[in-house]
Length: 86
Ligand SMILES: [Zn+2]
Image (cartoon, rainbow, N blue to C red; front, side, top):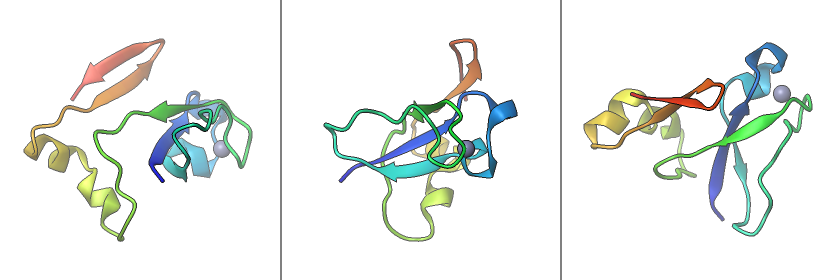
């Protein structure tokens, strides 16, 4: 089952859970989450270059530095529909 990452659209309204990215196991056919399961704030799916579902090192694998080292590009949502390439 793929793991999707989400984060709050509006950090001002986010709780501790969705202010940082959180991961949800979903079937491909499942509709994307629209709200944080904890606080109900609007969330958006973070497009990741790959999904890591195992091990405690998932966070470091997905660090900006590591992504760059492997030649991937990460887009950061700056709000208002603008994305910044890092
Ligand atoms: Zn939340």
